[in-house]
Image 1 (tube, one colour):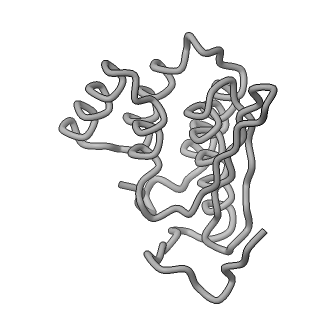
Image 2: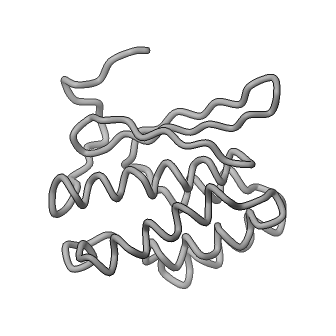
Length: 138
């Protein structure tokens, strides 16, 4: 989905704008951000249909995880006061954490932040399915 051709200044500007939108979005804007993310991440029409089906049945967190993809390690947290946090791990092992009005918005914001860090740090992130030597417990 994410290729080296998508790493230029225009892509960075798109991701920054999307990140700001996620951080500013309310619960009522969650579905629109998820649909926007599916397009922004270059998902196929078939995968975007799956996202739409998930949204139709209220599976917003599952839709956000599908948009993020299997290769990015993550952590989700929702506090007793309703604070929604998500962390996504960058290619270099650095974590990017974001807060959102919902868990799905926090996931999208953390993923966008990690993508920006990946672009700025290396041309294309090469994700592994198994944790590397930098994996650690918090």
